[in-house]
Image (tube, rainbow, N blue to C red; front, side):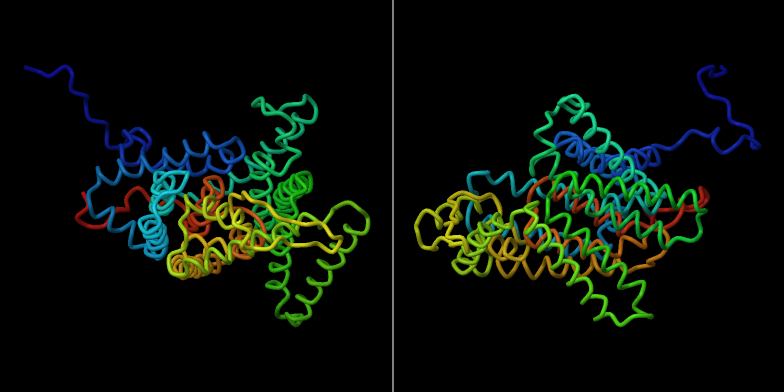
Length: 429
């Protein structure tokens, strides 16, 4: 009896899009879309970027399970995987040694989602032209942040309903937009200046996105992000002019511009450097925390508790500013310095492993620095600039941004392989 429910075979001459898309490819598309949506999700808030992370990881896990165990082996053979997992292992060692703090053990364990998202997206990029998706995601995030900021000033709240205060302060939306902009500025300006394969109109459009990011960064008035973006742009200038001008002359000019800028803003009263004094006290307490636990630190979730205990004990003297103001704070959430955060949280072990990871990141940034990747070579410099006095490397929002930067540096810089190619290793079917 003829099976009336059986679908007749498609003719040999049917176009490629007429064939049904296999589920592994659909899941790759979903994971790629979640990665491209992450920059905008970071602007929206924690619920959005956590959803983007979860969607990317889940799509990759289901896809790899369908393909076979060889897909997992291929993913974790990437140069970034060993140092990334080792750094996470240092956090777990510190957690087991010190016990959970007031944030709870789950806070530290859940950091594994970033260690899964990075290799997942890198694996997806071997089958999808993800570099374009990610860069488009950055541009959409810059535009959306600009529209939201204008709406907040015009209506008193943004398009989502968040009040203007969250854009004029240094927390929440302002902090996330400033961090995004610090990386977006050298990305788009470096691309516009260096890529001669595009016509003038497209290069002006790319430069315009960088200009919008500059306006966003200035509006937030977050000095650490401004300094980081400035260092990134100077580094790009040094790289481009190194064959024509001695590097030490360029860096001397960079230092002079920074010093003159600081003096100008301080004398004009636009900025006050007094808020830097409290960071000196933070750093002194963080150094004491490292001295008490030099090997594995005090732990991620227990860092605020350890800080509060040392600060309340009076063991660290308050810092007295030049104007006689006494700076001392008994409760702080992070060290406001990348090196001291690593040392005090995970000790020598975690700092050494992060150094290994950062070295691999720098190598990825220097890989094929042309086209859209031209500005990405500055990102390790921006990361160190922000780390001087700024973002907490262990916070969820900055870890999400860190994951986004790492995957953008590491994805393949090419088009999607042809449909006739087998993107998976032999024996994975």
